[in-house]
Length: 296
Image (cartoon, rainbow, N blue to C red):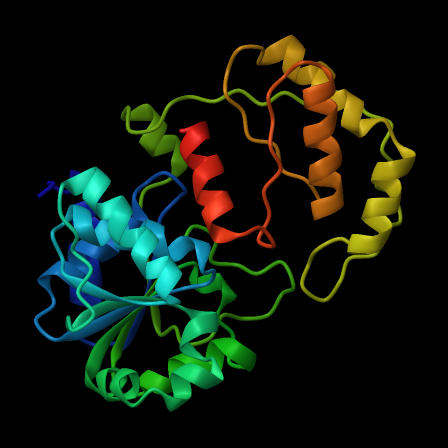
């Protein structure tokens, strides 16, 4: 068992206090502050059935490992291959698996939870009716339409805890299912108190032209136009050059605007003698896990 940091305990205490007068609470904590550990601790203390809903299947393992760290037995609502992979990861890390498909606690991706097969699963639906605590990771995704509302509507009787580092959407839409907000520490406070490392921003020049690219309703650049601008520019070579200048010999993660660009980036690094792999949500789950294990 781990002990929460003082500021994490403060957020947890504030959440419980907010539940005295509100059903749905949003906890805001910066990236790196430990949101996952905080809500895993809340679930650990909860006496009834609880579910953590995540916005991507890839995050299910991360949340499951956090629950395992606190020795919380939990079910995993995911394809069998994913469940087996998570069990193996538990065994590697903890020497035992905390995955129990009959447990009261659980973790699921919003996609799996709202799938037709899940709706037809009588055992799963019976458990959902027992759930009286819902935790929503990356709650800024949750608006009162579409897949997000379908997931929340399964638990209309449960109290809620949403967590996010960014309580504001790029498209200007308001988040749904929030009645009050608990504010955690700032990034600067975490740095000043030695909880986060100091960082350095570098902004090398590039000839990629970002002018006049339309922003979509989701708040993102138009993907097709952005891809065209990447191809027209020298940004692929720029990435390799800047890594060699500032990060040579260190592990690094590069983010690309689309899958094709990610593959271009990786190929350019390999051509320069730097080991690199491109990963996306389209890759086989076992390949992703194997590649991330090598990186670690």
